[in-house]
Image (cartoon, rainbow, N blue to C red; front, top):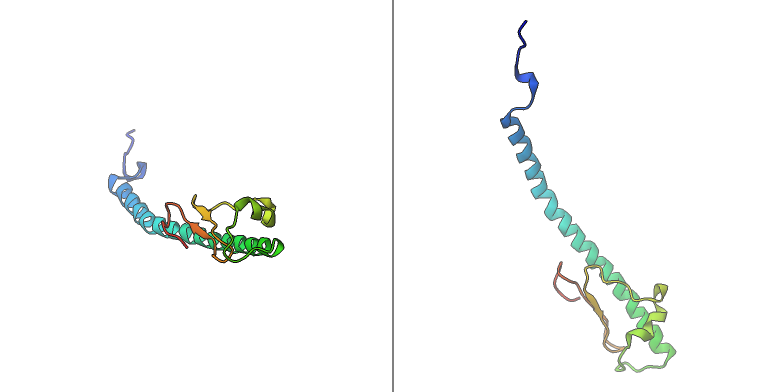
Length: 116
């Protein structure tokens, strides 16, 4: 008896190349969308943190009768923030506090590369 070797034994090189090209095409579409969604989520988180920080600054200013041109020390407002700590900037940047009148700034790290 002879064994027959035929097409049923495995995949051909052409079939594997087609599957790899389809996977590469799907990845080229999905990866930029994922990066864009991640950047958008980081921006939203940063904006929400800025609102929380600004509220803490305004509460601190009212409690201590600060004027609009007084500078804001970070340790002073920490007690007015959730969990008594400054929220983390989502992309590794930093929050910049100026005066009571100025809104705090969020410098988003390497992802978006600009200041709000």
